[in-house]
Image (cartoon, rainbow, N blue to C red; front, side):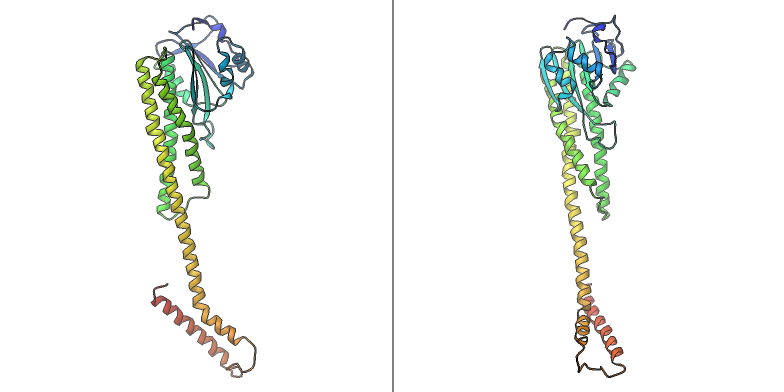
Length: 328
């Protein structure tokens, strides 16, 4: 793509429109800006805003085949080559709300050597790292280095969240060692978060690997090596750790089931012993309570007291016998 005028990127409700200065910094795009491959532009839009949606649908800078994807139609991580440009869909941990961070935020983007267009619906906190680098003049200098920086930031945020889940698993394991069963649903939620993370991180790792291997003109060899490092790190620190955590949650589920079965067995055992202790006395009280003539001691004043004493002796003997057999 050739030179682009800044006026062609005038979107009133854009989140920001910056031009990379080629030295690690950026400046806002104005109508007089001249954008080329040495000084590409980064345009970040919220596709739910009316002006941004209209620009995405009508701008001649965007190929027709990617318009729907940039307006939120693309979900799974993927990369598609479109001439000198690429349509890429990446996902980031949802850092905007603490309730459901495992609900990944999609970030579709169209990138070539001159222009970078990213869209979103919710806040993407990983971009703050790239923005911070640009504000201190240590950020990306061109489209290739921008893509590597963004992928690196997304991987760091995903790894941090997986590490957070790993710490939760350690706490649950410590509780289980102390015979403490976690609250109902907490382990299921933890496992769901891990599974959802893996569902998106596995294809995202493949996207990084493909970007590292394809011969894209605006990505040089050093940037390809860095992209491969990002893919490897996502595999080692991300997917391998997620798989290990999923396996550990399965072990914890088995341990919790065993603890519950042991608790139920102890209660059943205790009730059985109590029933055995009172079984002779239950038999005798049933026998003497038939209210028929001829019951021994019925006419004797001390008969009832002697019968109660006999019951106490019988219960004591049965208890001693159970203790002697080491059943209690």
